[in-house]
Length: 468
Image (cartoon, rainbow, N blue to C red; front, side, top):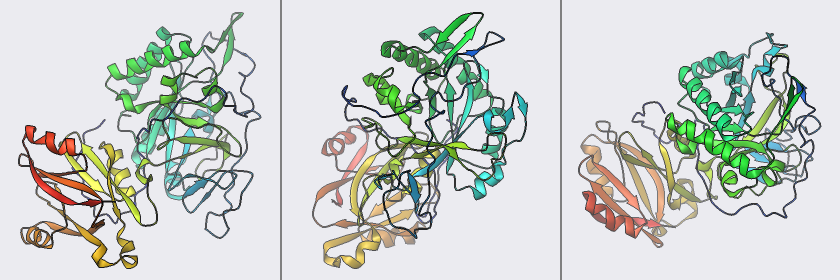
């Protein structure tokens, strides 16, 4: 992760990005059936140099169903469609069921979009991708086995130059833990050499079915869940030893394999990007429900991509910074900056996304309030306004329901940033603490946290406001 910086937002900028957070529920039931096609490995590819071949997804052939966009401009109703679709920034499955509110449209890219028969045909126009495609981010293939993707050097340079949020995926040809460790060491070294460390999306270990031949010997992907678990563990261990965070290491695969070759609790916890081309994602995503990515087609068109394989894989990623919101009820997100050891609170999903992309840790939904636009629907006597102020000298934000405190801070040089949200008069108590060391206020509904922090120098300041 690159160096984190203190960032100041006024809550009005609209910047789309993505984050990572994990929700734990249950393992996929053994009886759960996935209706998917083309799950078997493709016919074995003959290798002429003894090295694993350049792979395509094992489920692409015959599994594709392109996604439509029946209502990008909001002109049509939410009628069920045979294909998933986007509407006003939200993503729906083919039955019209919401999959991702304020979802992130993410394309995954490899040399297949630029090269044919090993030769460059046409590079991606990343400026057009950024300005005219409607894509919110990309996931770049760094390579396969220990072979660099031919387009990676160019692609990573360009997405960084144009500020396009990106993640990484690596296609695994490992058949055991030793080979997976070598892949992990290679990926870590490669990413560092290209400065690909400040990622907006995770690093996905691509675990698919495959088969290839060399000198009469057929190599096939492991089918035993325990072996695949050991493979991922070895890859992740090598990455973590190289300095990559544990939470950034995830799995990409398809829904069918998650019930079969990858059906372990530990692998399900890592599987946050799942492919299935059809009407809906038939996978209950037991752990990563808040930031799950669904790769729903391999036939999307993207402005700026017109090379030998112009159609690309497209995914809809859920945004953890938009979970839990209703028309008037707003979650207040709590984030932590490990560089400055300061917290920040916001009801803005956009601000939340940006901070996570810059390296802040998404901690939790701290509490709930009303969105400020709801004030016309509520009686003034039912709520208190929570004011937000910013100190340009030390980067601290302050939140208070006290008009006197709000005006006093303004007179001392703090910048006022309007009303952050509206707090109810009755509900769950939100406590306030003060850290004299760095000038930070912390707000929590956790009574144990409120009583424990004074041991570490925090000062209790009683009730800040109430939470819904």
